Image 1: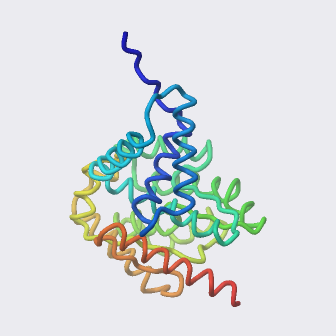
Image 2 (image 1 turned 90 degrees about the horizontal axis):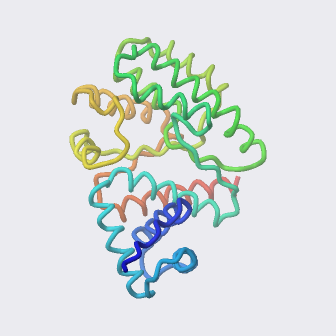
Image 3 (image 1 turned 90 degrees about the vertical axis):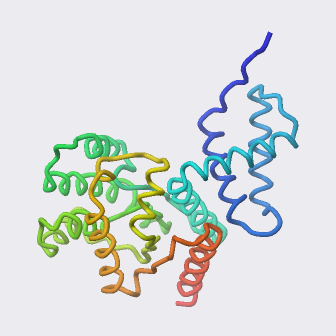
Length: 272
């Protein structure tokens, strides 16, 4: 009788993506981080009752990883970028908090569901809901972590509101919008903002191949072109905070560029 293999629990699935980051984006011989993570995953699978020899396990892992990357490129790059940054900062002794917007807290995740699911939402309502989620995230997680000397990695932040709801919709005065955003964040501004920049049409093609869909993905091309122009304008206005990374290049080159930027900023911080 054939007994189906148990599905790995959520922790193992999360670890699988962490391993993918080290496998694809660390060049040369496998890093010690990769070896330890691969050993942990393999041992956990055996403990869960999955019968698989080590060679088959490694081959299957690489195959599934390549398949996932092909089908869901944008989501994969976002995840692995966050993992790479966490790894770099942890190697330098920084306590790292990784979060996202909208969401990041129980309240924020409820707001996220409202934002993504309601196609009839007015832009002004959308703006205020984003700020509600952001205010909760800043006060519940981000500011306390910073006060303890940690580093925060946030997948999108206040600039996204200016880009999408400001430059994209073109319905709200930018200064008014920035005032609303500043109220939500309590004036908290990132030390470094990385813009992973790609041609709008290419970005939409990647998005169509997979990932979490939301109603903002359904707008016309001109909307996204305005959003991209908005990001570039903000980067031009604050060149010391922003770094634009050409994300149209192969993933390995993109990740190496990110690594170089972050390490340079860390060294600057240590010299200061």
